[in-house]
Length: 452
Image (cartoon, rainbow, N blue to C red; front, side, top):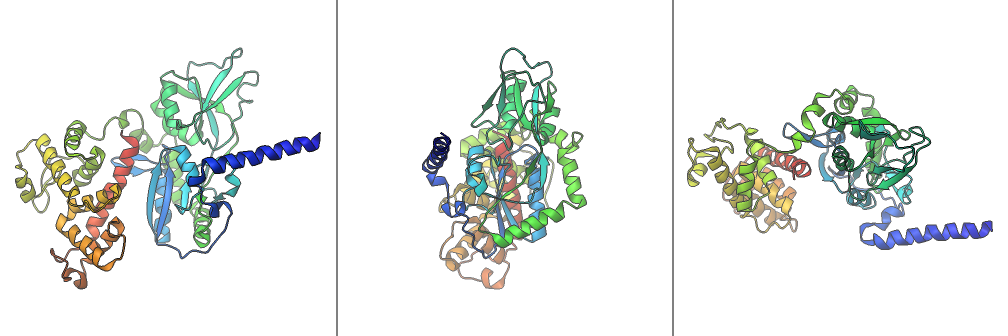
């Protein structure tokens, strides 16, 4: 009897593994699952996937910040590396990315009780949290009927309601796509009655939902850890050593206080239903002209913020003026003067950005094209055309990759390159424009996750 039971269990596990492999064949890199470690030639750039989490990544005064976002930026700075952070809001996509070779690090809380998580390589804990039960202030736990508890997909820990009300019946409903932020909205609108949240996220969101409260803890503490690429042995050692050392610093204490404190002014001013309705007072006009000229209004808004922070009265050193700081020659081309209305300025600025965007049809990937467009708005399209020509001359591939193009934009400050026969616009110190474009794109990616 026992032998048969063991056989059934083994068969069930093997069936689950087979199902997982078949259904997610195109999303798994088997070298990682087999833990075939190889020493890497360490790269100067950290590639990170950050799962969208309201206390880890949000917009404050027009710029992306957050607990893990700031920590990752600090780590890259301390290591002397550039960092490229990709933010993913789909929990299933983020989870299966942990099994690929696409990133050096996946910043996501993973439930270690799942079938394949023993194959993952976790970092030292960077912080901790615990699950709590959230309900409306006037909602009571029912002793006679089954209470439905909604738990977000990929919740990082098992929940236990025994300490909340041991005589009540509970139905656990794991949502497939809803994040905790989505469940807070449903709870506040009375569409559901109970949700599970990690405490750090609850502290972030509750100030903006006065009708909600924490009923109590529903599980044990869990460590918040990063999933590391097991092929990066030396890099992973550095990451773990950095985490251990950083947690002893005052910077780390300040980070925890800034994002995980109920009295944090950053949280109070940054997140909530009101702050997610608009980027600026000019959203309607920006959206209108972006729809006309085929641009993402959040990209244009990020450029405007970079130029003026939506201040309409600024005048630049070279005579640039207005909300979008168009230079006098460019403004005249679009029929603008310093007496033109804000709506006219936005129309001209959007039309100008669209004309820049159309000059780079050979750049196939949308993000690469937007990086180059942002840099061209700052430097002028001629210098970007020069950088692309240099890239085509000196590189055998990647001539449509923004990083390679920016490499040669920066090299245009050197005699060898600005005197090259393929260069038409001469000398240019490209470092400022590169920094400008990166800041525009960082903010644009943040806007994409916050503003629909």
